[in-house]
Image 1 (cartoon, rainbow, N blue to C red):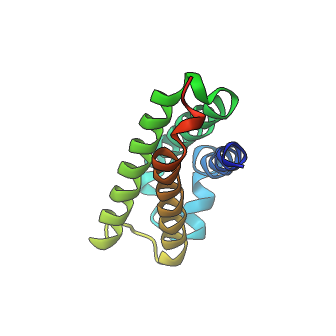
Image 2 (cartoon, one colour):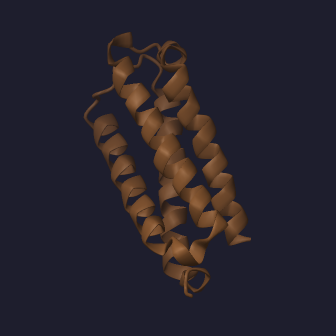
Length: 128
């Protein structure tokens, strides 16, 4: 069950990352944000695809050999989530429709907390 949820989060991350990576103007338009930070959206999309999609895919395929990678993914996810929360709290987004930003934050919080939950409660799937 846990491995399947890791795969699900991996695929979800791919879909989310692709939006930022390949269609950042769509996201800017959807949130009514200034299109001046498109390069940052692409960069974040590449990070999400690379680390969360490909990284979690490797963890899914062979958790026993990728425990350290899973720790790095979890820490990175937590840092990205905290930075989103910080930016939202200090109103650093130019979005005129913050609901989409808030949904992004909620999904990031859920994913981060779930990864921590796996790390703390299912270490046995990573032990050789």
